[in-house]
Image 1 (tube, rainbow, N blue to C red):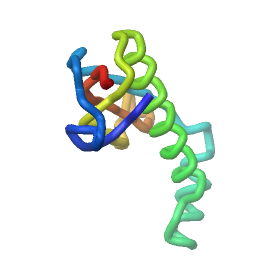
Image 2: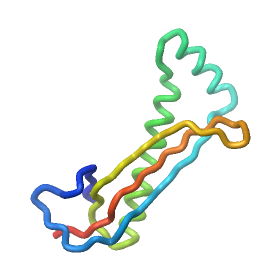
Image 3: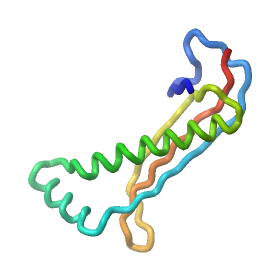
Image 4: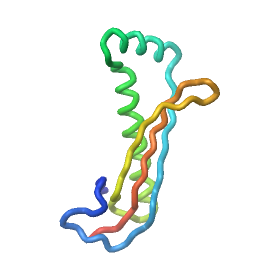
Length: 107
């Protein structure tokens, strides 16, 4: 699957637009993880645990997006956007990963 953030694929001709596809992943923190990473962040100005979780969520959302594009019969995704943000569900901190793009068929 070819994936790009641009609206075209250089050197490829889009022959069919299948339409927009969306994916989302929501994950919570393990009990204590948020607190311990918060302490580490204060000391080190970074939180390796949070960075790894965000990277995993971004990858999962992109993988899900690619599968949804395949399900439409597409062989490429253009205009891909992946976003990760913190949300709170029932007072529980969560991380939401969202991905979107346009599924297309290219020659």
